[in-house]
Image (cartoon, rainbow, N blue to C red; front, top):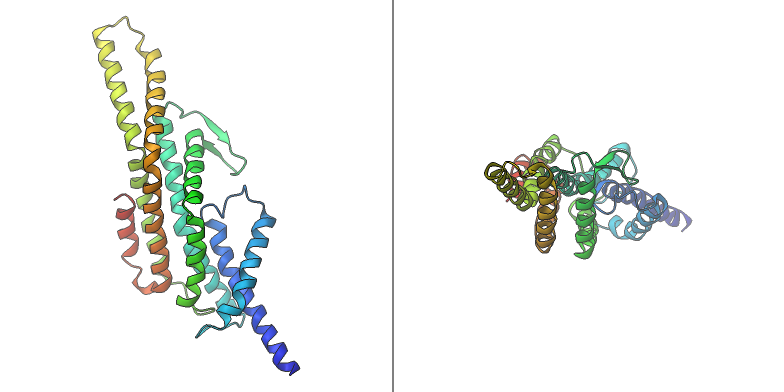
Length: 273
């Protein structure tokens, strides 16, 4: 009897450890979860609580192995990292879109020492990232990510995942779509500020005495902010569509690593579609 209890306890601890590694890999990089604004102790308690609740369930799934080994730990970490690194492309998209908009707003030299980042970041890059995070929270996308990670234990049981080279290559290829998606998000601002520059240039030709240099920057900034405010209503649909594409890619990479060869290219075009 005592041996059976000890065996159950060993299996529980092994399953909890492996589940902890998988969830930690996702929390380390996924949007909202990876924010340094959340205290490390809070993240640790959250990950520990999720692993504790999942351990008895995932250990009972078919083909699940709760034995701890280096291969099992690396496999579980790889599953979490596939989720985290794929979804973090959304954050990079928002940051790059903010950099593009900042150049058009004449804020190229305005950088902030962001307390949540070890580097200086553009002013509008921080603004775009914050608004993107608000959309993620308001739409409940953080809960969808957590639910997807939990479902992954049924698709890929504990200790059975092996990272394929094609998976990493697919994520790298998908990163190419970040640039196209960022340009699409900032396209209205780009078009409006370009029209302002053309209009001011024409005024300068018609009236050489007009101080066009002192008019260009404030007109571009005011026009850009007005258009940015008006386009915010379209942001939730845009961000949710890209988020869904990234999450679908992560799930496919987990379920079929060998079929990951063309997923990166498909998502690279889909992010900007």
